[in-house]
Image (cartoon, rainbow, N blue to C red; front, side, top):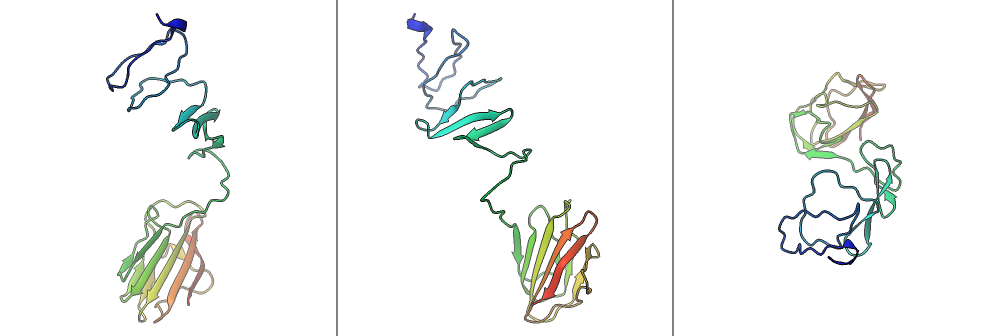
Length: 187
């Protein structure tokens, strides 16, 4: 029996094995192949990933992980993100008869060379209050423009046509019932 109840095991072959430490805790120095763990694994100290201590995964609080001491925000956490920029989700195509925005894929829609009548339909998906959607329609020539009634114009009514050589821009925000335009104009 090795000193201090240490057990030497050759695990370099990748074969399956069961290792039961003689005490409540133990250490495996390194493993050079994939391992599958079943059941609950309890680690009472940080886990080192990579060489030496270049990436340390640790428990910051109940249900909170940290890498190198920096808390990892989760889907359910209420962390404040700083120095981060949300990346707009965009959809860009040329002419199309209808524009049916899908909230699951984009919030900014471009039509780069609209050469046909266009109908902007109600968004597909479930919006949240405050969500925004933007439209940029570049028209080669004046085209009939129909906008679904879920979009509520701010001030003047929406135009019935696009303007040749101009970009129709419309910004709307969901208020819980409809999409109210914050701004709509041709520039």
